[in-house]
Image 1 (cartoon, rainbow, N blue to C red):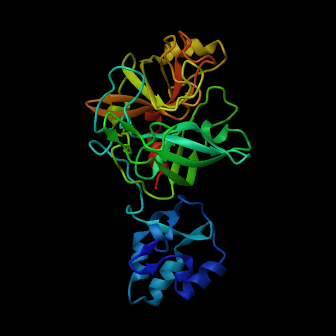
Image 2 (cartoon, rainbow, N blue to C red):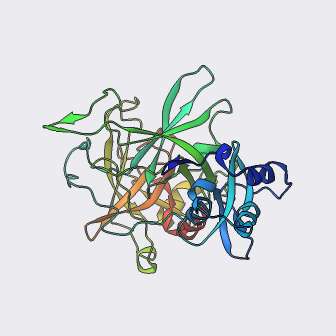
Length: 362
C-alpha cells in the first residue's frame, strides 16, 4: 500500500526501526488481539499501515529519537512477514453501521416467488472453499455487516472436511452460471472476490456438540469493500430494545444458493419466507433426537417444503423492521430431510452475540 509517494512495506522503514523489529524478542500477539501501547493506552494489535496515528508519526518529515522509540516499542507481532503494532484509540476500529447506512436495498421486491431480484438482499455472501484436487466450490453463506466483515456459521469453518480450506468470500453474486448478471434491463457490477485476513470462531463452539451452540464466526477481508447496488451491509440488532424484540410468529426471510426441492444446488440466489417459531415448540421437535436448544438458538419454519437446506449454512435469517432489514439469525442446522413438517430449522440467535461481534471486530 502506498501513502503519498512513500511505500510502507517493511523494507521502506527507517533502518533503525527495521533492525529493532527484526532483532528484538518481544511477546508476539495475534492480529486483532488487545494490547497496551508504550504510554499505557489500550489498543488493538493491527497492521502498521492501518494504524493512522503511527503512520502519521512515520511520515513526519522530522522524526525525533522519541518518535523512533515510540514506533519501535509499539510492535506487537508479525503477520506473513508484515509488522503488527499496538494501535490505540478508535480510528483503527471497524464500526457497525446503523440505519440508514445498512439494511436498505435500493429496490424492495420481496413479494411473490422464490427467485430473488439481482439487487435483492445485497448483503448475502458466498464462502468459497479450496479442495485438495485444486478445485473450488461455494458451500456456505454469510452476511456482510460492514466494509471488512462477514458473519457466518462456525461449523462452516470448523466442521468442513479436513482437506478443505476456506479460500475467499464472494459478494455481489446473483447467478453463478453467468459472468454478467442482467435482468429486465438492469445489469449489476461483476461480483467481488475478497481474500481473507482473519477468521474468528466463537471460542465456545464445539464440533461435537449436537446442538451446535455458539455456531457463529467472523471473517475479515484483507481490504475494505466498496458498497454498490448489489453489495451493502445488513443491520444488526444493536440497541437494547431491538435485541429484546420478540420475533415469534412473525415472517422472516432466508436467502441463499443452497439445495432446492430437487436436491440440486441453485445457480441463482433464492429466497424463502418462514415464520419464526417459539423455542419451546422447537425444543420439543429436537428433544427426541437428544438435542437441547438454548436461548442462543432461534427457530423458523416447520412447514412442509419450506426450509433452508444444505448449502445454506452460515447464511442470513432476516426480518424487516420499520423498513430496515436486520440479521436475526445465522443458518445452523435442521432436520435430515429439509422441509420436514413440524420440525423447524435452527439458527444462531444473533441478538445474543452482539457484544461478541463488537468485541471481535477491529
